[in-house]
Amino acid sequence: MAEAAREVWITGIGIVSCLGEGPEAHWQKLMAGKPSADETMLAPFVVHPLAPINFDTQIPKKGDQRQMEPWQRIGTYAAGLALDSAGVKGKPDILSHMDMIVAAGGGERDLAVDSTILSGIGGAPDAGAYLNERLMSDLRPTLFLAQLSNLLAGNISIVHGVTGSSRTFMGEESAGIDAVRVAFARIVAGQSDIALVGGSYNGERPDSIMFFEFAGMALKDRLVPVWERKGKGGVALGSIGAFLVLEAREHAEARGAKPLAKLSAVASDRSRRAAGDVTAALTRLWDKIKGKIATGHAALLSGAAGGAPATAEERAFLEAHGDLAVRATGSYLGHGPEPQFPMNIALAVVALGHASLFPPCDASGLERPMSGDLRQVVVTGVGHWRGEGLALIEKVG
Image (cartoon, rainbow, N blue to C red; front, side, top):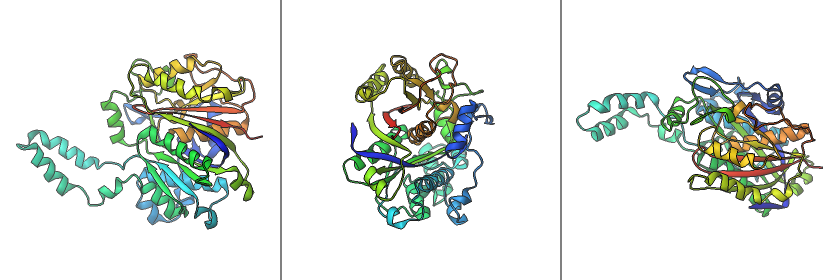
């Protein structure tokens, strides 16, 4: 587990979701206790669609916008917000050595081609030959390029001029967790001074919902808070873009930047997911930071997806550590696998800025009001299929 011998500040955040754009819009919606979900757009599935956004403000060239898929536009936009927040937008002396670590999935599928193949393959005398013929003749030549996960990092470099080292991690929730962990560890080790880290997800994709439905994990019919989803539970996908600017304290002070919060620890695990593995993994991660927690002044933001058994096991862990006020942000935002962890770190920063926690959204009894001043936030990330992570974010001063 990386621990901050060299202090790591969060000096910028950029967030977009169904709740809106930026820290204040999110805080107002969270304080109002009003989740934003759509139960009709892709009925019977519940989704959290992106709030209306003027992409021109962060991606001014229409040509750039047109060549991006929705998840890339969301991420490029959120990255621009983070750079603005950190005060480094348009400063090549900083952007030229700013490292970038992006958590990304693959591109969207061609649903028309998928439908044609699925409709015809059953009646084909040779299924393999039919599949090859259709793929060779029906797929547009640029589709493969659109699938490349590192296109988001490339677009951020083109649009915003971030030209330091670049890494892209794939692997759903694990990608988001490890993107933050590696960026943090590199700054602690003196290998990096400033980094842009985050990811994005388009939750309004029928093909993604199809994958969750095939796994028996998609939430249907109506929005239910994460901890109240019974039986197999259910995942309500959300469109999310979240980027953080992480910076060595010395580097930030040298340019006169102020910290929004301090990132004090990040850890990750990848259990095999036998029964009890999630609870055990979170307990191992917790043991690494529990001595740092100020009881009465700490809260926990969970990235629980809502699907069983992972969410049930995370709940078992949280119930065993009941001295922290818990909030599941998925009840409000939906679930975006890659950006969920950096988004929750950003929301932790927002809450620390207000020195308070937003109200519970849960009738099951796990989420309770918090009365003390908020000084620390623990963020958990538990992948719907694989990957566990934990971060500690603290108020500075």
